[in-house]
Length: 187
Image (cartoon, rainbow, N blue to C red; front, side, top):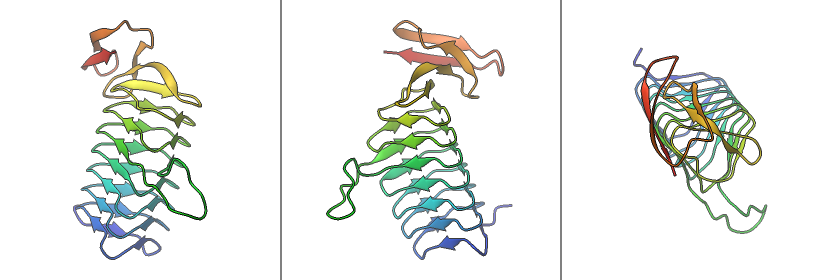
């Protein structure tokens, strides 16, 4: 179970680092200097660019594009067809200016979401399917839409625990589903 598995149709370039238990599936491409932690799953036809850093226990679904400049923490879920950008002013010719993006521990990103570079997705936030994230997302926040806006607050288990109208301050909220107490900081 701790062996690295690379499907015969996948490409892992020389210089890429794969952690123990990592699996790279059909037609996926992991570029040189990419670092993937332990127990990472890279889904079919996904692309992990040069220099990308991915933590432990990360699940990257099919057809995900993770471009240079992105750092992903531990225990992150990235749904199918998610795309990260890495240049705020892209052109086909000329210099690229890579702008970094950070995905902190425990984040979940729904299918078809687009994450605009320069943002920080803070711990345990949930990005709804189809959302376009254009600015930082607070810890435990549930965001949705284009552009993504706050819709509520989620537990560590990703279930919604409060609406978006919590007053400023710190709130201790127990999840009805898993019974975990979550500390939500509203600023």
